[in-house]
Length: 278
Ligand SMILES: C[S@@+](CC[C@H](N)C(=O)[O-])C[C@H]1O[C@@H](n2cnc3c(N)ncnc32)[C@H](O)[C@@H]1O
Image 1 (cartoon, helix red, strand yellow):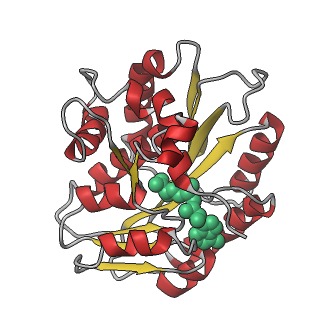
Image 2 (cartoon, rainbow, N blue to C red):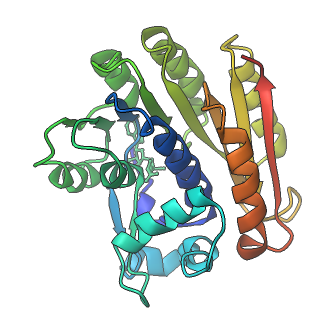
Image 3 (tube, rainbow, N blue to C red):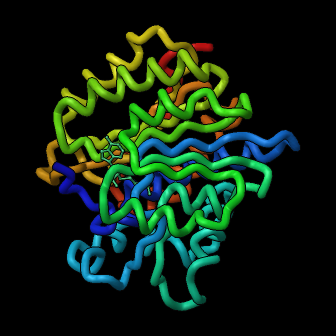
C-alpha cells in the first residue's frame, strides 16, 4: 500500500539538503568528460507544482526552498542549486520544484545516462512522460530493490545512486541496508547517497550504526536539523549518508550548511562527519 506522495513535501527543508548534496555530487562527476550513470531508486513524480492543492495544504516548501531561492549566495554549489530551481520559475514567483530525477535531467549531458524506478501508479506515468524523448534513459514502474538487480551495474562504471525511500514502513530501514549491500556488490565504484529522516534520535543512530556495520568503507554523514530533537515536531531534520563521496564534498557541504543555516532556521543544527575512513 503506497500512501506517500512527495507532492505534499516537495521543496521542504529535507528536500533542500538532499538536493544540495545531489547537486554537489553531480557537479563533481560532470568535471570529467567521460559519461556517467545517475540511478534514482525512489524517483517520485519528477516535477511538483507548489501552487497545487497538495503543496498548499502542508506549505512545507515555505520552510525550505521559499526561504532561499531569492537570496544572493556565495557558495558555488548553492548557486548551482538555485540556478536549477530558477530554470523552472519566473523571477518573482516560485511555482515549481524539481524532484531528484528532474534535477539530474537538467544538469546532465545528453551522453550521461539516467535510470529510475518508481512504484506509485500515479507518479510513475508523470515521471516517465518527462523522459520520453531522452535518449539515454530508462524509467521503470518497478520496485527499487528489483531495479538494482535489473539495472546495476550500468554500462558506465562511474555514477551516483540516490536511495530515497519514504520510510512509511519500519521494515524500510532494513530494506535500505540490504539494498545498499546488493547494489554496492554490483557497482562498487559508484557514489551512494542515502536519505534519512530524523524523527526519533535513538532510531536514527541505530540505523546509522547498521550502515556503518556493513563494513563498506568511506562513509560521510551530512545532517541538518531545523528543530531540536525534543521540540515535538514529527520530523525535526534529515540527513544523507554518502558512500564514496567526492573528496570535495565534506568541505563543500560545511560551507553550504553554514550559509543556509540562518535562512532555514535560526536555531538549526548541522553536522558533517566522516563516519568510516576510506
Ligand atoms: C521521498 S519520495 C522520492 C522523492 C524523490 N527522490 C525526490 O527527491 O524528488 C519516495 C518515493 O518512493 C516511492 N516508493 C515507495 N516504495 C518504493 C519501492 N519499493 N520502490 C520504488 N519506489 C518506491 C514512493 O511512491 C515515492 O514517490
